[in-house]
Every structure is written in C-alpha cells, then in structure tokens.
Image (tube, rainbow, N blue to C red; front, side):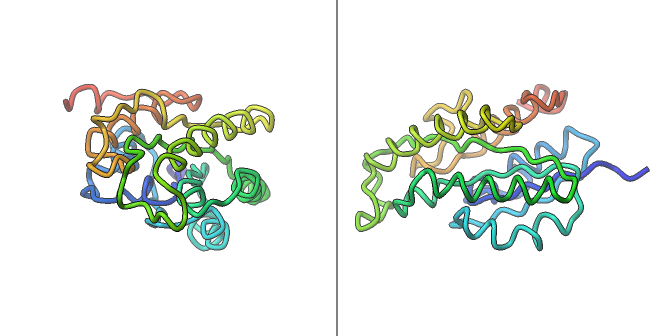
Length: 197
C-alpha cells in the first residue's frame, strides 16, 4: 500500500522564506507523520499564480491532501478579498475533481505595520496589517460556509515568532505552524515537536 501524501502549495509562508529547509513547517510536519510532504511554495506568489501552476505542482503529484495557503501577496497588491477567495475556491474544486482533499491554510498575521519593506505604491504597512486581519476572518467564514477543512496558522502566532520584517515566521514560528497543522481538524498527532524544544 502506498504511503499517504500531502502537497503544500503557497507563497513564502510555505516556501519558508529565510529559513533552512529542515526547519520549515512542512518539513517538521513530515517528520511527525507517516506521510510524504511535498513543498510547492514559491516566495512572492499570489493565489492567481498558485492556480496557474496548480496542476503541475500539486495535482500531478497525486496526493491525498493539498494544503492551500495564500493571499498575503495578493493583499500587498491591493487585490480584493473576493478575488483572492475565488482563486482559492477554484483550487479546492480542482482538487476535489481529482479526488484530492483540499485543506485551506489561514495565513499568519503581520506584526510590523510600519515595515519599510512594503512597497508604499502598493499598500502601506498599516493597511496591509489591517487587510490581513480582515482577510483571515473572511477566509475562515468562507471555509465554514463552504464546509472546507482548514489549518489555522494564526493560532498562537505571537510577534516573537517572526523575523525582523514582522511578516515571515522565524524557526520558532515555523515550529508553531507545524503544531497548528498537527492540531488541526485532520487529527494529526505529534511526539517529535514536543520533545525537540
């Protein structure tokens, strides 16, 4: 019998911006489960980009599950929540069409509203942080209404779990994200994270 497989598709939150591969949440998750984990995250990607590459970098791997985590870069480009969610909806339907269980990842918060790395021509730091908060709530409500499984990556994500930019999780942040996935409605269990402080 083949091992179960999860594809994680997303942006830098999945790709693990600034973090060694072995410390990414996807790799930590893989160390806890008898499931193959494929990281299909690309830093800077939008949900439109994820949808465009969904077959090649997700469906084609023939996984049992696909964790879809996106929206942060869309918001930095001032793309509407409705447009972002329509892309996520399309990906979930695409997965289901191929008998794959989609799981929606709720993106992490922003902890530096004054961040100078954010392009002021697109969206200022304060509005970026505010938009992320609204989007998280909107995406959770959509997931509930559409009966979608989720991993809430916002859970217990405090400011000390981020790099200096306040946007990308650090090693401890990725560890917490892995815990959030393990404690999600998929009923994952973990021994590894609890014994590797």
